[in-house]
Amino acid sequence: MKACYKTGLGFTVCGDSRDLLESLEDNSVNLVMTSPPFALQRQKEYGNVDQNAYIDWLTGFARIVHKKLRKDGSFVIDLGGSYTKGTPARSLYNFRTLIRFCDDVGFFLAEDFYWFNPSKLPSPIEWVNKRKMRAKDAVNTIWWLSKTEWPKADISKVLTEYSPRMKKLLSDPESFYKPKVRPSGHDISAGFAKDNGGAIPSNLLQISNTESNGQYTKWCKAVGTEMHPARFPEALPEFFIRLLTDPEDLVVDIFAGSNTTGYVAERLGRHWHSFEERLDYVAASVFRLLPANLAECRVKEAYEGILKGETVQVEDYVSQHSFLAAGNQ
Image (cartoon, rainbow, N blue to C red):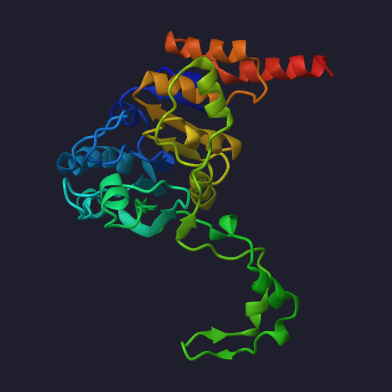
C-alpha cells in the first residue's frame, strides 16, 4: 500500500479500509481504535449509511479486524446514539451492533464504556430544542471488544487523580476509617490506605470535545480546507492506547478522519497505521504531525503534495524545522 504521509512509527493511507486491512498480516495488530460514521438519519457530509444497512456494513469491517488482531488484541469502537426516523424513540443500532459482533463475528465484550461530553450541543434539535421532549444526547457508547476473554490491559497506566477526601485519608488514615467489614459486605482492610499513585478510573469517561484553536484547526483555516466534522478529543484514544498497548505495539484506525488516533499513538511511541477513504481529509490530517511553528508555505507544501499523490515524509519537515530553529537562536 502506498502511504500518503509517514513518520518513523507509522503512516496514513487513502483507500477502502477493508482492502487495506486485508493487506496486513493476520494476528499482527494490538489495537484497532476507531470511530466510524454514525448511523444517522440525516445525511452528513462525511458519509454514512442507512440504519437498516449499517450493522451489516460495519460487520464487514469487524470480521477483517478480528482476523488481524493478535490473540490478546482489542477492538475499541465509538458509536454515537441516534433516534428512529421521525420519532423521539431511540435507535438500538449501537446495541445490535455489539451483539452482532459478539454472536456472529466472535468478539468478546471486555467492557462497555460511556463517553460523556459535557460540551456537546443540545441535539437532536426537533426533540430537544423545538418540542422540548428529550434531554440532550451527550453520551456515546464505546465498546471495548477483544479477540479472546483475556486481552492485554493494565489499568495502572490510566489511573486518575485521587479526590481531595482520599488525599486526606491517605495522609492520616486512622482519623478517617477503621478496618472492618462494611454492611455491603466489603472488607475494608488497613491496605485501603495504601497510596497506589492514583484512583482506578470508572467506565464513564468525562472528556470535553472543545478543540477550536488547535494546530489542526489553525492549518485547515490557513489552507482553506474543510475540517473533519466528527473529530474526537485526543484524551479519548489516549486512554485506550495507554490501557491496552505498550510502546512499539501496533495501533490501527480504520476510519481515521483527522488522524487523532495516529497522532496520539505517535506521541506515545506506538507504531500506527491510519486508513481514510477521503483524500482531502487525509491531506489535512498531516497538520497534526507537523511542527507547531512550521512556516505556512511549508505546511501548504506538505498538504498539496499529498493531494497530488506524493508520499510526504513528515520527518523531513521536522528535521529541517529543527535545523532552521537552531540556526536562528
